[in-house]
Length: 505
Image (cartoon, rainbow, N blue to C red; front, side, top):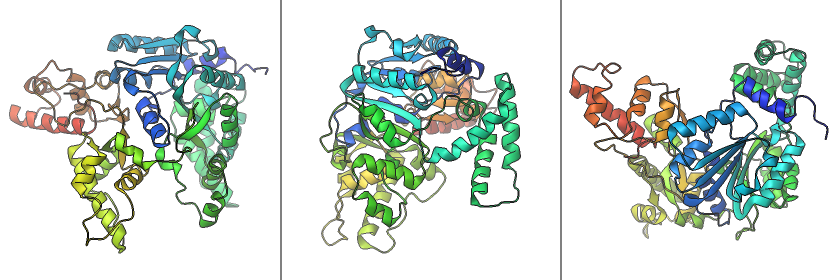
C-alpha cells in the first residue's frame, strides 16, 4: 500500500503533536474488567495481579499509569508514535515514581522482541485511525505475543452507523481541504458545522438526522474533532470484516467489553426470530444492523471457550460484586433504584430482592460482597409460601451487571469507605487533582471534578497529614466559622471520596 502524506508514521505523529489528544482512562480496557468479561464468557484469563500489559497508542499514559499504580506487581508497556506524548508519559511516570511501566516511542510493528509476551493488550482509538498496514502489523504482533489465554481490547468505528458519520466527515474535509494549520482547520470545520446545524426547511427525515450530527460536531472538543471527525485515516469496517481480520491472525472474538451491549435490547420480535438462525458472529453483525451501531469495543482471545462464548452467570461465584458508579449517582440523586415487577408475583419478588441488594451495596460502597454473602443476606430464593422465582441469584446479579447497576471484580482494589486518621488517596488521583479537573479513581473511571474544594483536598491526601492538619491546610479555601465546622465539611468530602473509590486509608 502506498501511503499519502497524511498517513505516514511521521505525519501521524505530527498530527498528535499539533493538537494534543485528550486521553483519559477507559475502565473497559482495564485488565481486571477484561478478565471479568472473559471469565463470564467461558475463558480462564491470566491473573491480573501479576499480569503483563501492552498498550498500543498509549499517548501520554493517561490510561496506563493508573493501572500500573494500582497493580504494583504487574508490568506495563506503552508504545506510541508521538515523541511529545511519550515524553509526557515518561515525565509523569517519573513524577509519580511508578517503576513498573515502560514507554516506547516508535511504530508498533517495530517493537523489540525483547519485550516478550503479554497477558493483556489494549488498542483503544488505534484500529480505525491508522493505515491498513499498521492494523495488520498490530494483529500480527498480537497473534505472536499475546499469551494463549490472554485477552486483547480493541476499539474501532463500525458500519452501518458510520455511514451517517462518514457523510459528515466528507463534507467537513472538503470544506477544510487546502487549509493549512491544525487550528485553522478546526475553526473552519466548526464554522460550517454550526451553520449546517441551524434549523432550516426540512425536505425529509434524513435532513434532521444529518443536522443533529452537525450539531454534535460543532460542540465536541478540539481533540475529538481533530482526531476523529477530521482524522485521516479514519476507516470504519463492518464487524464481520473486523472478525475475519482478527481470525486471520489467530484471534477470536470473545465478547464486547461493555456487558450492556451484549444483549439484544430493544430489538423487534421479528429480528429476534432472525437471530435464532444465526451463528454468534453473524448475530453480532445483525445486532449492528438493528442498532445502526457506529462504534465497538471488542475483546479478542487466542483460545477456545468452555461455554462456547456464551454468558455463564454461575461464574460470578468467583467474583466480588459492588455498586456501580451509576447506581451510586442514582441513589445520591434520590432516583428509584429499580422498577417494580408491575403486578407479576415472581417479578415483584425479584424487584424487591434487587432493591434490597442495591440499597445494601450502596450503603457499604466501595466495599464489595461475594455471591454467597448476597444469597445469605437476601434469603434467596424466597422461603416456601412466598412468590417463587424461576431464576437463580446468579441470573439476577448477572442481569444487574448487564444493565450497569452492579460491577464485578476479580482483583479487588484495597479501598476504604471511611478515611483513617491520616487519609491516603491514590497517587495518580492526587497528582491529577493538582493539574486539572479529570481524576481517575481506583475503579479506573475518569471523573470530572469541578469542585475546587474537592480537588484541593484530594491533592493533600498523601497520608502524611492528620485529618486536623488537612482541615488546617484548607483554611484559605474553606473559611468556615471555626475549626470544628471546617473539619465537619472535610469529613463529608472524605466520605464522598471514599464512596467513589479514591481512598486507600
